[in-house]
Length: 438
Image 1 (cartoon, rainbow, N blue to C red):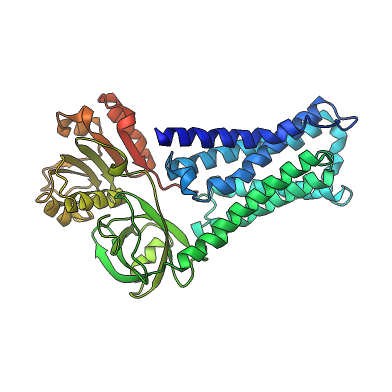
Image 2: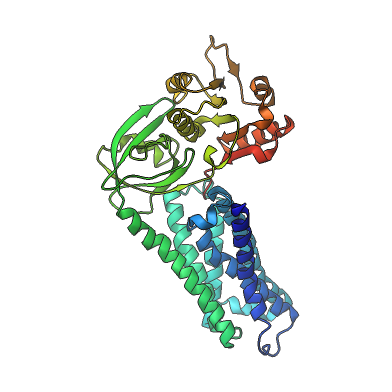
C-alpha cells in the first residue's frame, strides 16, 4: 500500500510540474498583439520543455522515484513521454509559422534575432536526440557513442531552449514567472550533477576487483567481483546493477547486467554476461584484478517483492541470469516452495547453467523443462518455442496461486504474457524484466 501511495505522489508531482508553466502564463498582463494561436503554441512549447527537463530525474536512477514502478517501467515511460514532449516542442514553431507565414523568415540565422537562432538550435538538438534514440541500431551507432550523443545533446537542447525563453523575455518579466523557470532549471542542474558527479564519487569509494572470469555454456561469461575495502552490495535475487569496468566510474562505458549469484552472499557478487554486442563480445578478455564499479541494485524482478506459494519461471537465452540468482538464493535459504522453470535455448550443448540446474534439483523443489529450437536428433524433450501448449502441459495444479516471472527478448515476453492470459493467469501475477534502456 505504501508503494501505491508513493507512486501516486510522484505522478501527481510530475503532472504539477508540467502544468505549472502554463498556469504562470496567466499571471500578469499578456503581451500585446499576440493572438490565440501564438499563445497556444507557447503553452505547448512550455509544457514540452518542462517534460524534457524532468527527463533528467526520470533517467537519474533515483530509488525513491523508481521503486514504486520498477526502473524498466520508468525508462519505458521516459522513452514514450520524450516523444510526446518533442511533439509539443515541434508544434510550437509549426503553429507559429502556420498562423503567421511571415515568421518563416526568422529561420534564416543571418537575419533572425539571436534568441530565435538559439531556439532553432535547441530544436535541432532535440531532433538529434529523438532520431538517434529511435533509430540507433539502423544508423549503426554503438551503445557507448549513443550515450555520449544522447547525454550532451539533451543538455544542449534544454540549455538552448531556456536561453531562447530568456531572450524572448515576454514570459519571464514577471517575478513569479522568472523564479519558476529559475527554480526548475536549478532542479534540472542538481539532478544532472547528482548523476554525473555525486553518484560516481560514491561509487569511487566502493570499488570492486574482478576476481575471476569463468567461461559458461552458450557464449557467456561469469564475472566474479570481490568488494575492495567494503562489505559489498546487498541486493534482492533477480535485481541488476550498472557495471563499469576500468579505473574510473566517471567513464561513459557502463552497462546494466543482472546479478547471477546468490543474494545471501553480498561479499561475492557474480554477473553472467552473454556475448551479444561490442562491449560484451570482449567480456572474456577482462583481466583478473581489473577494477570495476557498480551502481545498484535496481529492479523489481524478484520474488522478494511478492508472497506466493509457488513460482513459474520462464527464461529465454540470457534471461536465465536473474532466474539463476533467484534459484541459488532459494537454495541458500532452504526455500522448498515448488518451482517450475521453462527454459528456451537453441541447443542443449549451449544451454547456460545446464549442469547447475540439474544440481539445484537436489536442493530445491524444482522442475526444469528445456525447450530447444535446434535440438539434436536424439533429443526427446520439448522442441520449437515456448508457447501456450507447452506451458499448459507442465503447469502445476496450483497455477492460479503461483507467481510468474518471465525474462527474455521483448517479443518473447509479449507472446508469453498473451499465452498466460489465455490460460487464465492474471497478468497481475506476471512479472517481466526488459533491458531496453535506450
